[in-house]
Length: 560
Image (cartoon, rainbow, N blue to C red; front, side, top):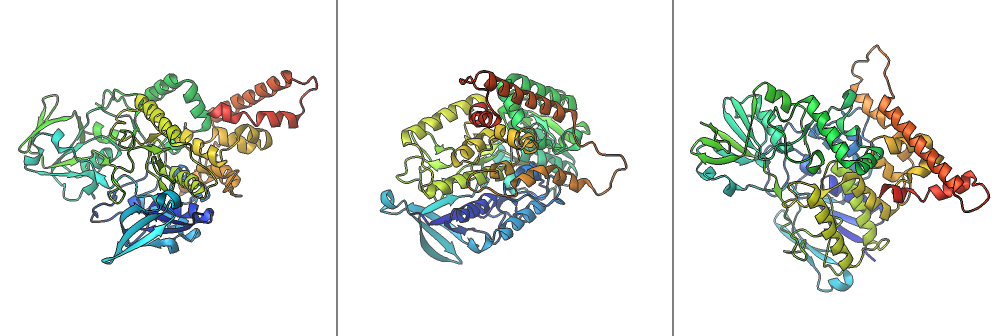
């Protein structure tokens, strides 16, 4: 029976993997190459090779309720969109509350992870580590890799002729720490992902001029949503997801029109060719203001570099450029794993449900947190870890390899038809459906109709409110007694950080859209009740208990 598990990395994914192991009675040992927890979210003045890094001004795009762990709501007084230092506070509270630190070997680098000779029978791994120059080999029953995908900068210099003879300085966004030293300089930022947008804004506060070069454009949204609420709490409910599934074109078009009402993307030079849901949007509160003030000028892709001049595809030229920052993303690479382990049947990245490599005799290696999604990573990593640890224990099993490979190919094909730029980063997932698919296997997916009938106050919040992670602790393995209360009080925690000055006028707590959704939902439940009452195979009318029993089987069909 599997007992010991190596967890590689003590960032958000590693911490929740340690806890998931403990919840299942497994014995985790976490190896962290640095001296502290936090991973990506721990700012370092000097970036360390092979480790994730952030710049000094980073604020998380996901609000605290959406990025929380499912059994650990964030303190009410923390801001909704936290600075990286505040997110680190939350991670420390999580680690201390569940006593995770004693399972971490700090300043310990993993050099290699290899199958033992008897792996087909035992599923065990040899993990070689190094600490203070001393190497050690460990044996584990399973391994969870939690180092993320922001450690290997992607720097495609061949796409920018002349850049290697550039007279100024060029660097990848991984190296960027702050705008210090950019006073009075001309800066070109290449790439309009979240890092590119942030760095362009940050640099524009002191640089002479910033140019933001984008090949495809992007949809730009704010952290501040309707009524000043966190943007990711609006339009991210299970009801919204159902509407998107039923009316995808209409919902996408409505969102694009709504975004363009805030500022016209075509006018600002940002209009992309792809639809709103085809690529993760740029979350940036300040970029439109920097563009309208001329501090950031949007430019097309770079054609070539001539000395200190940058030539763009439209023929325009910017002379005397001092700095070029490439916000061109990251490559995925795990140098400590056997070469080709993550590949299969010609696919460079072949992971079942983005977690388990194919081709292993035993499912004892899991990759946790290796996804991109329109949502927070913490609840995704947590769900992956909960699922993986139950597979390690033999409580759940994976399908045959042929079926898993077909699933990977089907998933990849579906996503390629939906998402732009998927070829280089085949890690995209749909947030709620992806979480639900694993939650269904674990047995923790919320039964919405049952909740609506048995606990309407909770059921309406699960259906109409934002899909916060606490929903996955209402039932099944790992059920948490505080989940219901966490959901019922989530808006109170959202409001708390704003109360630094109490306004005199009364607050409006329930909006029109919420009321409309509630009416539609109750109407839908009434229709279902009527249907089952009228079409019961028995001539005897259905009583409430009978109706509940029948309706409780519907959510899997309705929400898949």
